[in-house]
Image (cartoon, rainbow, N blue to C red):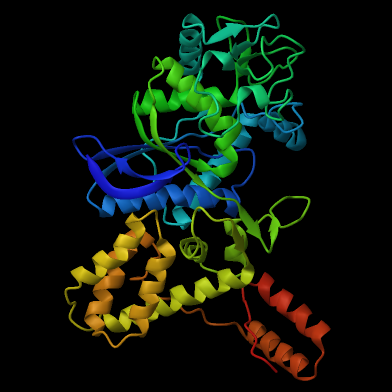
Length: 453
């Protein structure tokens, strides 16, 4: 069944229409967070991409079955030393599962603040060990996997003839020692093989018994096992960040297709591009990792983040800035105020305008054009009741809570005094004192916008 939504498929490098079954149900799998830390805004860009797709399909009259995994075991750190969950456990001297539960709860809280519709299921890797082991056993039986001399089970990359079709990486060109792969000391038959089940070795935490000995799952096997278990042998759309295209999604595709007798499990692979902040890649070392809580602490509506994403193409690298977030926050407040005035008039039919704006979204999620269209309507002399109808309808997809009346907070006498003192400092060109007071106000959740002197 056709959905009307076309998206750019990474595998074919072409746009294709998203499919649905005969009942209008679209099966979507989205790679979820690794819950050893807070999800930053770069992570959230991918998750909001999945939500935008889900809202678009629902608005078009389809039903969505979205599954998003929670990685709480199996994701190797870049230095290959140990699992990220165990690294965080040692650093904080806390139980790893306790840490995972804490950050998983924060992840769901962030999604709620950003108006994301919950997935149908959020399976945890640690609670899906049995289904992973069943899939691994099946891959061994089909000779797509083997047990190495070190007790680790490896997938045989050479057994899957279509390897590289998703990422463009050919097996003959791959060099040994990719940073996501397990150190195996020669136990692999081919250097590009990867671990499905890792022997415990000296590891004593987060290990499970298996037919191949105590151990823990590899990172890639969890998504194959979960998608096949929860969505069956056919996935209409698979979503993730562009950084997952290789090796994660390439390996996942090889595993899933091999388990299904080389049938293509995923119809369409959708990848969101990287996010920069203030012109740089977000990292702890750069000190520019931004969380939803950071927006709130600056007095910004978390949905300002959602609007900035909507104003940019999902397939383009994006540079997020505090200025763009502040501008988006102001836009949301203005639209809410204007909607309250527009809605005082009788609502008027606007089917043509709504269809025109929604058509941009159906065309590979061209949301920047939809936002621009709304800005033009906002400034136009269109009757108020019609404007209200258009904004209310499209907000079902944009999810900016435009129909919610804006709230105004009364400033305390202390804050008012600081604002007056800062204005005096700026007038006297005492910019050091002005900046100090601005920073103090930000800590109190007050963001002062300056005009030119």
